[in-house]
Length: 288
Image 1 (cartoon, one colour):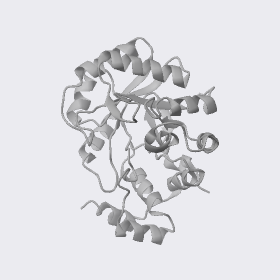
Image 2 (image 1 turned 90 degrees about the horizontal axis):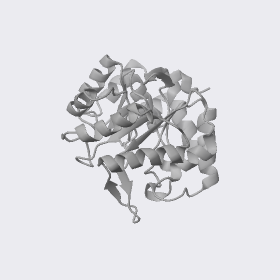
Image 3 (image 1 turned 180 degrees about the vertical axis):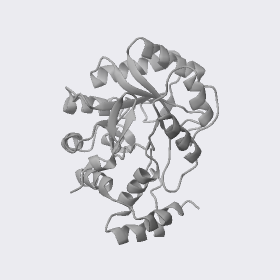
Image 4 (image 1 turned 60 degrees about the vertical axis):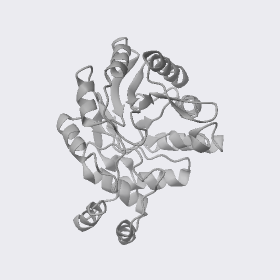
């Protein structure tokens, strides 16, 4: 039987979490805007994730906006002692569902308080600063003002730990001169592997790396090699892609998202897939 405990554990700040977690973004409506298509199904997915043993949930108050955090609070609060909820700040939604920058000190403080209120907590477990120098991927630029603002909120006890999203190695290093960094959340999957040097350096430091779009995101993974390996293992291509991430480095924490109970179970089953060396070598070759 599939068990997310098979994924192993890694430290997220001062808390051990299973390396198979859950990303709540898809619980919002189409375009990550508005209420879920089916509120009861969204509630059931959250309950099922917790029942499966998930103790790492990724969210943000700009999912909806507010909708996903309010749903998490409604369904899961009071929260289990071992549950780590990771949120992110740095953007806000317009009434037309647009994604807009929100990176000034005032906007970041407001975002933290929105997350506190909608999640119903006195302190946020982890807050990732989502960098937006380039919306399509990491790009250089100073983050001193943004990260200092969050570090001050951490000193006040409103945030326990800080992380970065869409960040370069130089920005991680800059942030570490201001406050400890417990995780980095960037795009990484079988086909997008530019961050491998960063992953290795974070592993050396005992810092978690959380790949978003682990299955390709808006451009789902398509590969004959991936399909062939999946067929040989009696799994789906997406399960194999997740299993590859778990095998790739011990500091990778997965947060595959879905609003479907069926897909949730399929994702979690990837934690129990053991990739033979021959299959791992074939998958390693996909990105060229």
